[in-house]
Image (cartoon, rainbow over all chains, first blue to last red; front, top):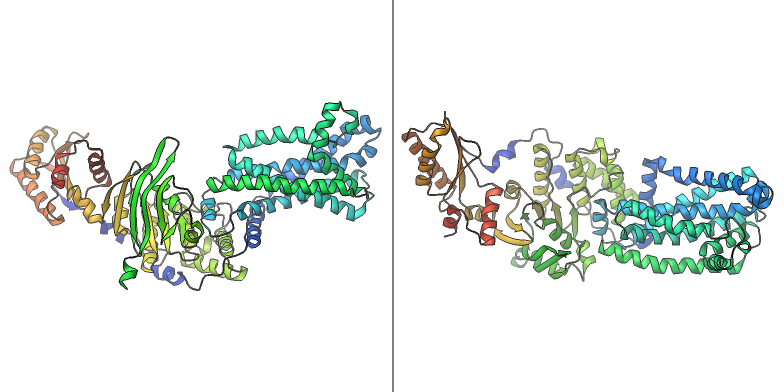
Length: 288
Length: 336
């Protein structure tokens, strides 16, 4: 038997039964009220910070790196070097703790780059970048979320330190000021990683570059030993290493003897890093 | 007002975007009237998404100009952004967040205060049938639900121009119909929609005008009817009972339809385009006459169908023409 069928596009219109979407319902929600005024830069940045917190809420395991890693670092170096370098671990801890706190938190900043690198590839960034908002707010917000992680890491280390016998002469205020300065510097330092996160093509390469920068920067400093014991050429590097100045400033704050010069050095360095790497990051972000 | 009717939502001239040495978009001129669905039709890699990304201020053109409601997409990007929304090929929502969190986040970014953003989110979730899934992460949504949350996000502040980049690719028929219904509703409300698709059927269902794009160029533009008639009114597909009768059937088809006949891989199947001079009903008359002729010649037909030209056919015919290669006889005839 032969059949003649003329396929017409209207066939498909009759397919839907029990549709959960009713045209009237959608018509009713189209443009109900006047548009709200355009939000400010701080408001949108904080909203993106809220997004970062929501992500932590959905995957709390991601806090592992800001809790377990700092604990391991503190225990490892206290007991590894304590006896050899300062005679006793307890004595060494008084010297090491501010430094190991700086090392751990600064190392954690590299996750900002990895986060940006994977996040930016997602479709949602297309939406963010078509919104009429202050352009850097998505990245500033992401770093706000990371700042929370830095505070958490610093707190973890301080608790471990206090348990092991760290007794800061600067008291609560000195410790808070030290952590505050560290967080300010880390916020600035994160912009280096956002740049690499946008610039490099894969998560792995971001990780590779981060390690290449972070290991020399944190170890070739005054974190573990006094620079006076090093050869002259190395001392020269240690002297210009911003980590050295940060550690000196944080140590002094926690010891109750704030060093105005080092604090200023760190704040100026932070401002310069944001100005340079923030600008580079935004150039890359706008082109991506 | 006549002024309003003639308003253009999108106007581009000589738009170019190159990635390395490849020109993904190679001089595209578009004039998209406001208030309707404009379809951009083409295969993968034709440059559809690149055009959308330039118009949505995500990519900087390497050459040419593009204006959205009169605003230049480069110089006045912010003004463009306040009028458009984008639903990308891949979900333009945060898959790690719940549907409700996504809409609240977006509401806040668009300037709503927290209670208003929450109220608006709930309103949209209800309208899009997502109330039950409101508290679930979007990555756990089905394809159809993802599309709906995506479009809901796009109309949170109802835009004047909505970009839908292949909104139904990979959806089942029911979800596709839902998306179509949503698009019709949004357009009825006055929003202009620029829709990219690989499916002629979809463009046909929704668009009042279509631009066919291939290799970064517009190779045809017009209403769906104009495009289809430009490549012939339809296609006849024929299956015979006996493969040995195929040469005879081919002769009958060639004679009655006056068109090139394709022999399919299946030894009992043939395909031929129906001449493009008539209307659709003319094609039906031609087809039934063909059937009568076949019966008279004693050729046993097991299946006979007359369909509209598929995208493949429209597309192949158009690309043949645009590259200057010799096209099928019926296409030449249709053009003549």
